[in-house]
Length: 137
Ligand code: GTP
Ligand code: MG
Image (tube, rainbow, N blue to C red; front, side):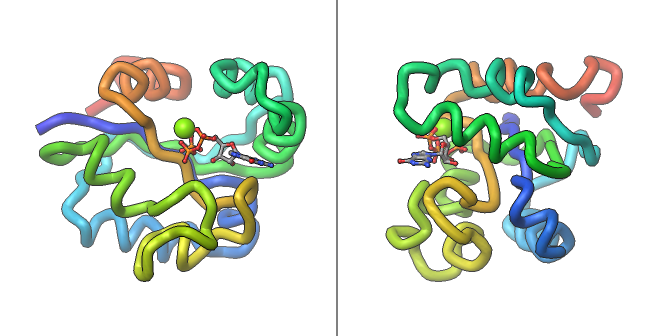
């Protein structure tokens, strides 16, 4: 088994979808390794999304991601990164498949309900951005 990192984004937390999203994640066979509720500052959101610094939507993205409470989690499953990206669906909810978390809960390409790491390496880096080693069980 291996691990991925996710966070429920501010729009989905605000709208009260945290429980429904966690239920869907567990029913898809992921074990929750670590979980908390927190809020990013604009600066920390900028660090988290530093790979997108040159993109036109970077400033908006950092403002949005620091606008409210988020729920970061580390998850464990066989083939975790790829299976989780399948479970959440396309970045743009208009293009997300039926039944995916983004199809069900995302509002727009920016406020798209949930994040999922795009590689094993980034899953480790992103998990450690939010959780100490002793919290990752
Ligand atoms: P994450 O799991 O959050 O990393 O999403 P992703 O991997 O599906 O998409 P990507 O890494 O390319 O973009 C990161 C985040 O930036 C997205 O989840 C959106 O919240 C936001 N984003 C991506 N493309 C756009 C865009 O064209 N416009 C705006 N406003 N936001 C975007
Ligand atoms: Mg991404």
